[in-house]
Image 1: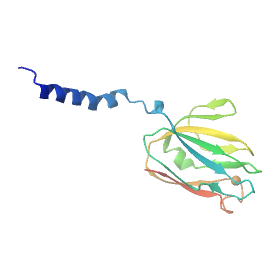
Image 2: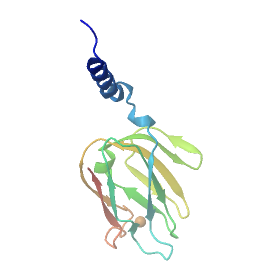
Image 3: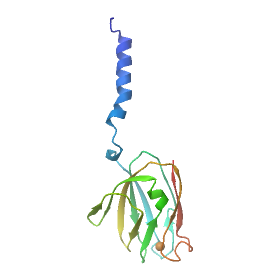
Image 4: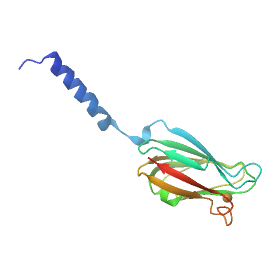
Length: 143
Ligand SMILES: [Cu+2]
């Protein structure tokens, strides 16, 4: 059978459609950077922002900063188990594997690289006694 231009175009389209599935490596995407602050300079016990949203399947770099005078935790265990963690970087150290919560000292910063894998709404809080009650809570959504 003679190969018509239409068939060639169809073959090219099928090859294009198949290519992403064959080449996919979600961990090698360019990350989307999202920043969250733990506490405020003046000492307010808040997450800024206190609502975060991510899309499943995309690579993120979550920059967790602490501009406040005391240490805080970014604690969201259910969220942590709904993402695939590539690594966490802090102070020249790189940690691979799953993460449950991140402690950030005053003036400190950590970078959490992950790909959300499960949709849902998750609770975020600082686990230092009294901080969640004072308002250090948030919501994370994966869509
Ligand atoms: Cu706190």
